[in-house]
Length: 345
Length: 206
Image 1 (cartoon, helix red, strand yellow):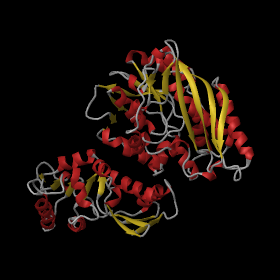
Image 2 (cartoon, chains in turn red, brown):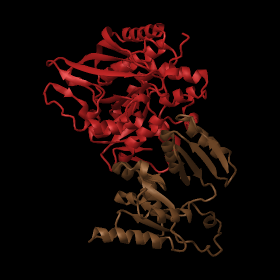
Image 3 (tube, chains in turn yellow, cyan):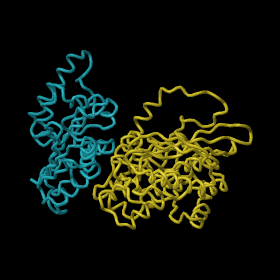
Image 4 (tube, helix red, strand yellow):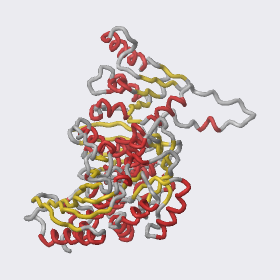
């Protein structure tokens, strides 16, 4: 592949999201439909909407697309599809079918790249057991790609942001740092190995974590994407009416993340996320500044953050480690609601 | 004076160069950072205030010049001499730290016009205080006193020049949507504000 997709963008992946505070402001006056069949809507800031069809089945719908975050079209397709499907897994659902969403400048980038992106999306969908059955393309620059995905779940087994209970331990399945590593890569500050490790985690489906959530009857979870670990944990805490304590020293980091952030390689999205969380977040005494900023690093196709009853967390970790998430770790705890929704320690 | 030129660079390169410049500067040397990217400008300021590095800002058209004052430690930082006395010696006389906490645009209640007049007069007089207060913390509507059209702004600037640290509550700034209209002072979070108030020997609340 000769065309470098990174030449088309300044910020790619989930870093390109609208600032969360602005988004909340915009959505706040929107009229939410009242329909008893809607089990989950945007009011709990969840990853996907859930619509009950009957007592056995609910539909789970989500869409996600973004500009390139890697140079190679095929990798971009794989990552975008993994990220889109992840929202279905985060709700405890099984993904079934999807539509492509593509914006592509037909006169400015070789059409070969278009094909590569779609091939990546298709391959990842196949791996997840998802059939892509249509799509839509708009001529636009820079390119953007993602999926709209539909899955199903039993209405009683929906996993949401609001399902965290006091005492639950929070388990994170993938290491954090994709935003910082990708920014470092653009400034030629990373090693090829560090970039490859970041790309590899972004291409990894959250399917095994989702299976384990079903097996362990998990009720509260989310996937970590554009709002960063702190932003998503805050949304969970608010939706569940608890306070979440995150122990940043226990958070698994991609190789290179800490040293890059310490050198000032902190993407703008991290500052936007910090703006969002700080009114309702208490940094603990002596919290390391670099770790605080890493907590706000926007992730693309990040891991699942699941709330696990303390007596089950050892077993959950063992299962995750043996099924392909070797870096999964307990990184926090839900406690009785305190003066702030999130405590960063 | 060391100069870091980040013109033409986008996030997070200006922040990385700022960090590098601070590392390379010799002890006490001021560092001047040239920034022409608004997002990076705001992030660099945020980074400096989070790391308790006092700075001043000068804007020339679309160019911002941020000067990090490395010579003048804020008076609230630990005073080494306090730790140098041995048990047998008399403790060194401690400089009393005065912090001013400002929670409103006006002084007192009763008449708003009068209240504004009094607050401006308060700051004019505060500048004459010797030694100057260690810090002034602005929160709630108090942050508006540091806005570009505030009648108290000149006095606040004078205080800053005399070595008083000026802290503005970030949550309040965001609440009023005035982030772009604050020519002086560092942005701080509640954690920092609570620490400043705790470390004060006395607090003046006008």
